[in-house]
Length: 158
Image 1 (cartoon, rainbow, N blue to C red):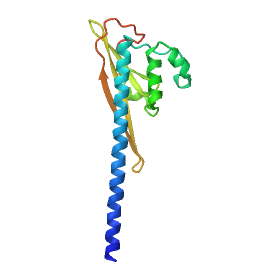
Image 2: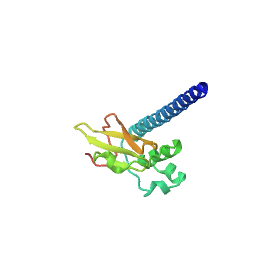
Image 3: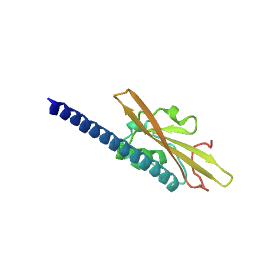
Image 4: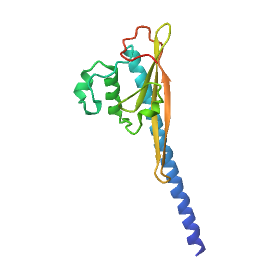
């Protein structure tokens, strides 16, 4: 009888370890994906010398052909986000805290003007939900572009 109770405890520890390890891997993958999205958004803004908002309307219903044919930065970003599977639709626009605009795909962009030009602050998010304790929390990942001297943006400074 004693060995069966000891085996149950051991089985419980193994299951707990598997659950914790799987949770760590899931959070790690989401964290890495949010960093990749932030870095790609910064690269696209710098390549296009500014952030041009989309003129397609609802990006979620736009086709891949329309997104790839567009020259607007937001369309290129959304296509990248869709391709890697990041589209974080659970993030609310209130997570930007009035510091920038919320865009389709779950990221925020804020243009900051200086005397020499402007730069952009980009925020992507990690949304972690813990179903066993019925809670979720959001972690912002923030980065900045280099100063852009000739900015062809259609986004206002903040």
